[in-house]
Amino acid sequence: EADIYQTPRYLVIGTGKKITLECSQTMGHDKMYWYQQDPGMELHLIHYSYGVNSTEKGDLSSESTVSRIRTEHFPLTLESARPSHTSQYLCASSDWGQGASVEKLFFGSGTQLSVL
Amino acid sequence: QQQVKQSPQSLIVQKGGISIINCAYENTAFDYFPWYQQFPGKGPALLIAIRPDVSEKKEGRFTISFNKSAKQFSLHIMDSQPGDSATYFCAATSGGYQKVTFGTGTKLQVIP
Image (tube, rainbow over all chains, first blue to last red; front, side, top):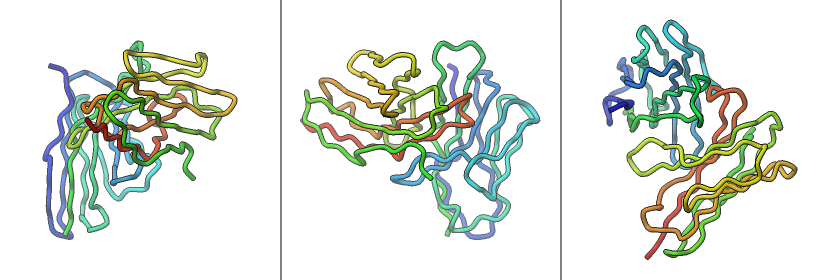
């Protein structure tokens, strides 16, 4: 079944640790996105990719980095986590412009990150 | 500067009632207005979407009303059910999801 997967679901780490949040999709979508979501706030785009070897920063400034070596995989890395990075991170993919009748984002279930 | 303003922040509706969530936008270049539904512990999922060439779109119990001149759009949930209890986000974009702006969300609770 086509889907988008994020791991881990929850992560509690100490300050200064390097972490990688995993995201994979099986739908063959070119476009992938990372959003940051805090309670009561809108989703903020932090990174996106148009395809393999394409990465762009979103509207929200982020100290994280991303890579897109394979179509299906779009990991997000924090080199040195801080308490200000505590948030929910949502990965999504889209087939916008690939002929779909309705343009939509397919979201993973998210990673809730807590940095102590 | 928030380009999409959503209200109310929370909403309690009795089962069978009508839930109404409103959004207003500023950027006249927006040409696609989706609504997303998010259950606890899950990512958002597209519920319904509209383009500005129509004033209303209906899918089952869910209807988007769109007022281009007022730069407002709203989601109506008819015959609201407890299973509709979720957070709803309006959004607006032009030219793709890399340019999307989301509203702050409305937490809907439908009580029996």
